[in-house]
Amino acid sequence: MHGLSRNSVTLAVIFAGINIMGLAWIHHSLTHCPQATVRVLSASLQPDADSPDRFRLTFDRELVDEDAVGRTEKAEVFSLAPSVPGKWVWSARDRLEYLLDKPLPVGCMMKLAATDQLKDVTGRTLEGAAEFQLAARPLRLLSCDVTASDRQDISSRSGSISRSIQASSFA
Image (cartoon, rainbow, N blue to C red; front, top):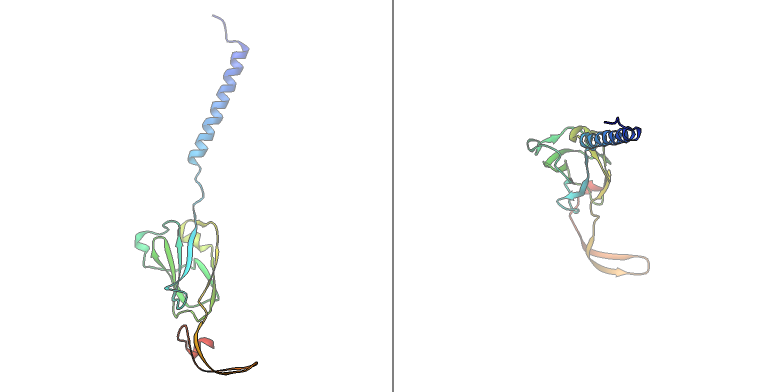
């Protein structure tokens, strides 16, 4: 029997090296965990933009356990500007709502921005949009009885607007 030739040994070492690198790559692919992320599917005013009493954020996956639904979220997972009194509540496993103490005033614009506490609470980082602009609908003039007009002024006797308002809303 002849001994192994130099070419045979070289080829065996090359193939062994390729196999070892392939096994290492497979091991890395199987054991490397992708970063856990979440996306906001929608941000809206509820029950509607005319008289909103809450903000609703709907996510693309469930973030909390079933027993957390209905509970108040103590962490400030989203910041509000301007700040308005209220509380964060998980209304479903994939839905977070900010319940306002008082409905938003007419035409009020709000900015919601994710905070670092979202990752602490859910274990996921936010992917995609992290800031959202929401606005309560402004008043709309539905009807107006004009009694007189000229080039500079209009006098009206009565009119109706889209919703009732309190004088304190303008203070």
